[in-house]
Image (cartoon, rainbow, N blue to C red):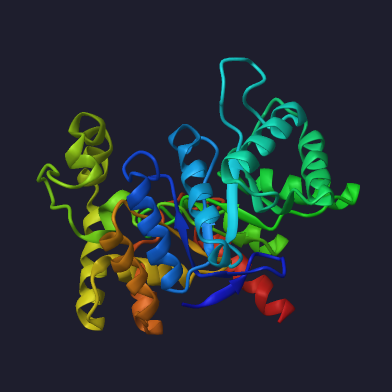
Length: 343
């Protein structure tokens, strides 16, 4: 396992994190505890959850594991999130001080801890003044309830606004951003990645295998079946399957992933994960698994070494489709020129 600092903080985390959205739903408590055992045994130390995962059951399951493994628990860098509804009232969601103070205390209770290492806003809140949210997070750091804070699913301008407001008010700065990012979904490179690099923040990509697409288990024009999220619930899954299946770009990317996998003696999933781990600003890639076999297989990406040429091929074939202005080649050339001038 490799390790990096958690964004612009001094905390050190493994480059692969354990995502726990399956805990309490697709993985029962015993399986979830096995996943934690497997992950820690492989050298991982970064566990990510949220207060809405399985209605809070994910945090509770992690809490019971932490209580049963006090020595190992000391090594865990623990992250959770808040933002979405946890009740019927109008104040039971959002990033207001009123909601977050209750959400944080509830997460601490479910996890059975007095301190959360990374507390994240699960999404932007257009209603609450950002200053109110940032002051609460700064107070939570000062009180010792959290060590650091970050965001999830923010746009580039939202991230930058938060960074500069925190700086202007003397608040503790954010350290991470958790976006969707993988070889099939690279649109964040236009705004979010540059904003994170500018702020010195680390990215924690979720859905690194694009919902299973980058594992190579789907076949062109063949409806998914069996033990896949699309196959097990086709009524829910097909609406996501059909548009991606229809794109020629999807199959071109998967073709190159499979070519590189053969070259390095790995499977497509490990190649896709290794590519993502190598991207600028990425601190830790969040692995979501339902079984220990899935997790063990994904953790094998640590041993995959991609050459500069292989990384370039994967990057070229998966280039996001954008209009020429303002994100096309002219903008890329301008950025490169700016880098050359300042070098």
